[in-house]
Image 1 (cartoon, helix red, strand yellow):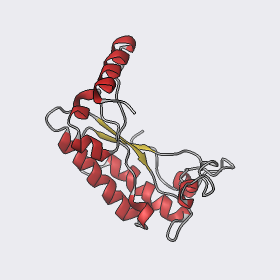
Image 2 (cartoon, one colour):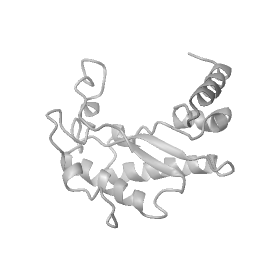
Image 3 (cartoon, helix red, strand yellow):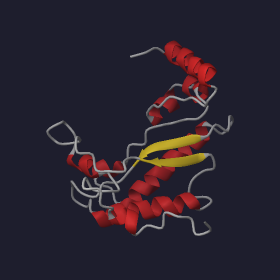
Length: 173
């Protein structure tokens, strides 16, 4: 663990040494309850833990992601600080309702929604959680079964429908 003073001192140090943008990553609630985090870095980098853990549909998880993005945009309205919302995900298996098709639907909503003005606030962009299904996230290692199915590709490196059927490229490119 570290104190707020240590965190701020290290962020300033890394910024001075590297001359690059620097941030820290915390849960959204931490940004909402510790105002010093809003100004600590050059952008916010919050974890967005999705509601699929509780059995939400792709549309519900996308709506929840949008609401999180709006909360963060409100927090940074005065400073205009950019937000990179990370850990955005939807598994393809591991619990009822989690299928390759439902994962594809979530990513279709997220990818297309990210392109549409109004679906996400300005200054908020998404970072998707995992490219490949993580072999190490097993029930035996203390993870919920869906965590083993977060990737856009299988452990064999085969693309899932979320990759092959979602229009990832912008139509104008």
